[in-house]
Amino acid sequence: MHYIARGLFVIRVLRGFRSLPRRHGRDVACFLSRNRGFEGAQLGSPPQHRFLDGDRGRLCGETPRGKEGRRESEMVDTGNAGEGKEWRKGLRVFSPEYYAVCAIGGMLSAGTTHLAITPLDVLKVNMQVNPIKYNSMFSGLHILVKEHGPASLWRGWAGKLFGYGAQGGCRFGLYEYFKKVYSDALGGPNRSTIYFVSSASAQVIADVALCPFEAVKVRVQTQAHFARGMVDGFPKLYASEGLSG
Image 1 (cartoon, rainbow, N blue to C red):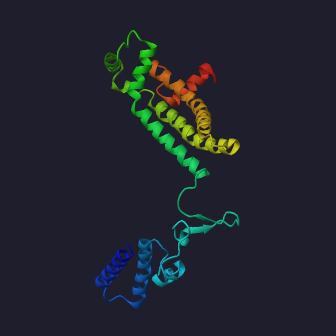
Image 2: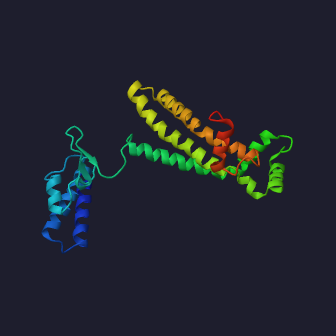
Image 3: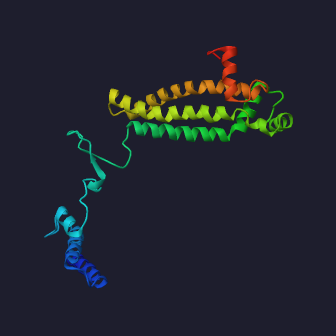
């Protein structure tokens, strides 16, 4: 096995010299220093006469890298002796930026998906309010289009987009926030309990954020002359029923 590894190393070195016969002396030394690592890896022992990382970096014109394999030029000093250096690129978990990204992702995903099924939601609400008239899916859609036009299938779309967008933002963003809070407060190896409590807390707040939009949306979808949408629906609902509406 020892001689096979040596033979593979010699073949690799000869191929390098054959492909680049006019290398400068410094480039040849750099090439040998890199391939000695290959020899040591094949033999299963530390390579002999291997260049130090800093020496090989200066020899080969490479930028020194940190412990995680990133270039030191990509690192910035935070100024705190305890924290050391942080990466210039990337997103730190459980940072304000991380929570914001999670919230925005939840808003976009939940808002757009619920917006896409607005016609089905309009039919569902009308079937719940008047099950005798809208007694099936296909006949209900036909009645809505025939009596109120195709635009009636998209009544309340703003409530779907912004209401469920707010719900999704609170659900995703607050879930990550509560997960960090409960992990620090409770600790322990039982992660399932922490995840359950975090998701439940986030979902409660998310549903509360959805309620005003849902209240206006249902009235817009079931009462043809109540309002045209969210803009005039909120003031009208507040004027007639107050905050409890």
